[in-house]
Picture 1 (cartoon, rainbow, N blue to C red):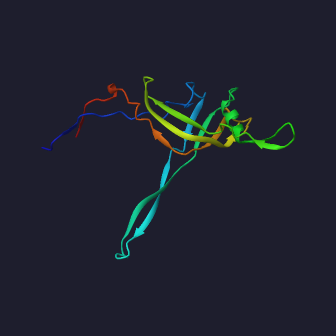
Picture 2: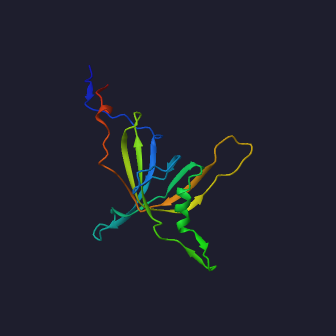
Picture 3: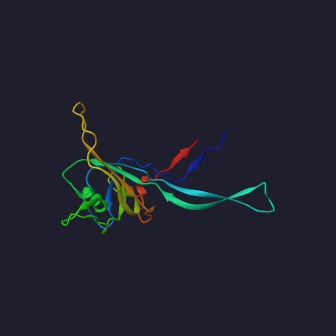
Length: 178
């Protein structure tokens, strides 16, 4: 008879639709963010060969690049993302010259993930974000039956998981594995 192993603890997977986004220096969440994509980092591979061993190559990690994040949210009267996007946009000043308002255009973000009971179980900190693309409204279509969405593309200089956020222990349970 095969031996049945028992896993002492198991953690249920978290749902991908329970999240909120906020600026790291704020306690208020950005309203109606319904989708975030682009949490991806890629590390360049550097190949190296020793002179005495021309048949074998070794691989070393090189530069790490972070993909831009794409935020999607419903169009509302809230202008927080539009105001942020306008900090890198060129505009005409009172004298008629072009200028860009680059003061405080980089901001850190926090993405909080919640379980079914509403407790925070994960958090990611995203560093030095700035808006490289801003689409204030999606295509208008009089034959569609949907809400209007805006898209914001955020360049960033990396992200890390906040290890101080720990999932509650009541998510763990004994689970026999056969």
